[in-house]
Length: 162
Image (tube, rainbow, N blue to C red; front, side):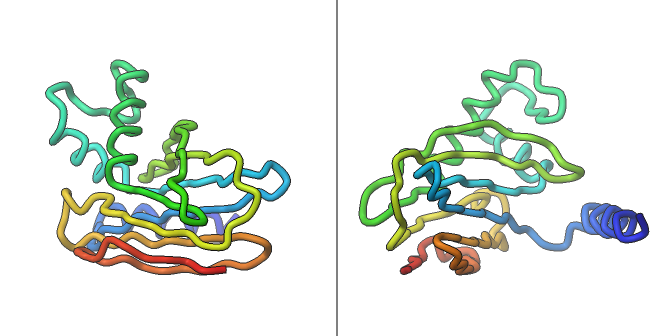
């Protein structure tokens, strides 16, 4: 209970101060389902302000006026700013949805029909159009092996070999 409360207070303090701009992208290979599951964690306010640059309607992820329109805006933005190649082939990222958790939004994608990951090529500029001090941290997991890398603005590419 105390640990849970400490985590909540820490996240709340970070959200209030918000001295850094970071997203975390987890790419997990599900060998049983032969798919890649992606989750992208971004501060909600940062994503709302970024999406607002491309919209005339008010962006509110917690209480969207039209969820289908917002889902399309999120999908279009992420697919424009994050390209993934697995084993040299463009990944067909399929939007699953999003959920709000405290001050962050979790966005989910899936890439079906992936039997194994030998190589993952990433081109990512998520929120680079929001702040030029943005960092995107990647965690890629396959066959019990996890590798991580941090892309700092303006760098956009990295490669994971397994």
